[in-house]
Image (cartoon, rainbow, N blue to C red; front, side, top):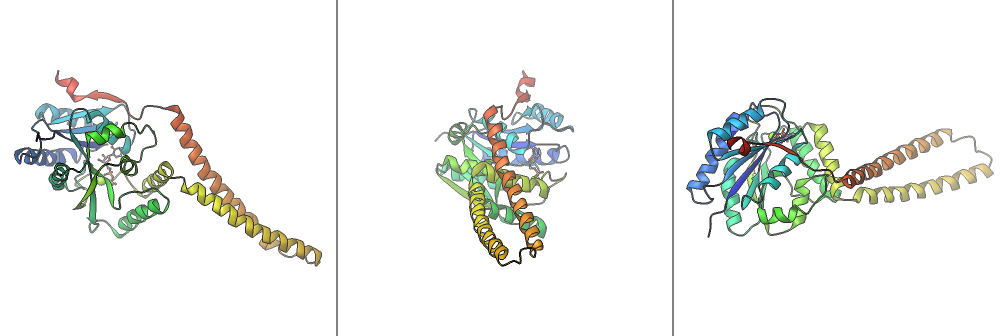
Length: 319
Ligand code: UDP
Ligand code: MG
């Protein structure tokens, strides 16, 4: 069987501190895979510069000049992690047989790439990298991250538990995935929708080698909400249920008020009145907000704007 060509797709945003360290680790792993005969010698490491404001792109350009296994593309501006990964995957799908997307900070165990490729050779088209332990994370990070996956599943966005964006995807799956045209991206929830034979490999997640996380709690909440509203309409059904419950309770309240009126003690109950009004107002505003989020997404989808724009390529510089 012909050895598959692998492209390792790595999004980078302001990563000048880690890139010089991790690029060597990625290259070592790629070379190990080539020497072991698992992948073709034409395999590459593709960095996607996500509109960094520091010297990340210069580092990528220099790396690609120094070694033919390195190459890079640059987004015209910062579009976020998901769009950067998508740009890399879509750009490499017709040049390779398999892609592995991985963060550039060395948190995900690079050594399991070999296992991922082995699974591909056994016939799996998608291999999810799943964290088996979170010992290095603080209790807070672990708790919020695990709640994140639970919330997603409860809300109808099916994702692989403890799997982030470290995964192998065959270019065949990517070709099918390119038909998913939505601009609201939540890759870890979308890839399972493509189907095909998939499996998971387990690894330990380390601490960031250098630099800082771009995913504080606020961004994680935003990602969870984005994931839910991109993949599921369960919140809308929940609003309907909530509306029903509130209507029934209100109906009982109305009955109570009418009876109280006829019994002549209608003035009392000011406090309960205020409570009900506030509660109803709050529920209505939240519900409107959720519905508004969906309308906002529909609005963004109708524009059909490009999901990424590549402004520079290291391959162009070489010619
Ligand atoms: N990243 C990106 N664009 C952004 C933010 C992050 O391409 O706007 C990249 C970043 O360089 C890294 C990956 O996405 O390779 C994950 O980011 P980070 O490590 O900060 O997130 P965490 O691992 O803390 O969740
Ligand atoms: Mg990280």
